Amino acid sequence: MKEGENGSTESLQSNWFKAAESIRLEDYIYDLPDEKIAKYPLEQRDHSKLMIYKDGEIAHKQFSDLPENLPAKTLLVFNDTKVIPARAYFKKETGAVIEVLLLHPELPTRVINDAMLVRHSCVWECMIGNKKRWKLADKLTTNIEITGQQVSLSVNYEDYDQNLVRLTWDGDFVFLDIVKALGEIPLPPYLNRDTEERDSETYQTVYAHHDGAVAAPTAGLHFTQNIFEKLESKGVKRSFLTLHVGAGTFQPIKVTSVTEHRMHSEQVVFTKQLINDLLENLETIVPVGTTSLRSLESLYWFGVKLFRQETTEFFIEKLYPYPFAEKDLPSASEALRSILAFMEERNMDHIFGETEIFIFPGYEFRLCKGIVTNFHQPGSTLILLVAAFTGQDWKRIYAEALQKDYRFLSYGDSSLLWRKD
Image (cartoon, rainbow, N blue to C red; front, top):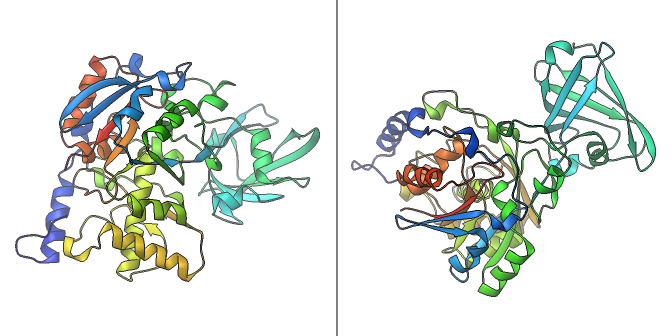
């Protein structure tokens, strides 16, 4: 954000808060008929439609045309998180069915990659379905089978008010074994259907690697090995980060003043290789998906904190990026080099962090030049992100997508949007 005419940071912050308070939810609502929501994926991932928006112009392609519509030496950044079967059901002796949706590990570790390897017992924050039928003192039990062995699993409240649930099991199995044997893939609520067996494959990117998400980074669902081969032939580069997508991504905005919306924290992981790739391709960075974009922009702001010697904790508060004078901020290169120096000093190959960054109109993008993304829900945080990226043209983009019969949301069609500066 540019400094105010009087040059004072205080005036800048005051002006920013006034501008932010003027952003109203009703300005980011559009009519999305139910028949436009893709309830199922196409048979072939890369046969989806692709809308291209650049310099105010809109073109219509097929997703298999993506490689020829990216400049050579583009750096595509992918989120390689893997969706876990995080939804489980437990039946009480009374017949009541309790739904438990894993959200985030709490004990013995909050680091998702490590939490997958815990043995015997752990505590997770959960979303509880039919909670009124599951009392504080009740312990729910079930038997599951893992590699031919019967395993007894019990769940009880660790903290009723905070929805913290302790899971305890016998045998020498890691928690990921338990989850895979017990749960089902949690589809987005707006699909309004039960999970089916094929969703375990189709609601997963072909490059998914690190278990821990409860929602897929759906912009990546269109990519196939054939697309990757075409990208490589074109000279397009690839790099990977991990953001374990949480259920908060589906949380609707329920407040009139959007800045009051609660953003749930999500865990991010970056490698030293990724940061070097970014430094070598600063003018050509295109994230695949809003999760990749939010991760990359959060990475810059962690570099800001290091550059300004504020803290070494990687946590980006939802409004941290906004009330800065430009003169107080490092360049993208300076921010990334601050992170590399931090990692090298501590002999780190990767860094973990958490972010609740909220990107809405008025945000100035620091790393990302374009984005590959699907079409998002009305009045959602992701529509606000698209509006920040494309300006008021987002309305024209979405109106044309509706008129041209694009398929919307997680299993829907794709777009390649270039930033409007």
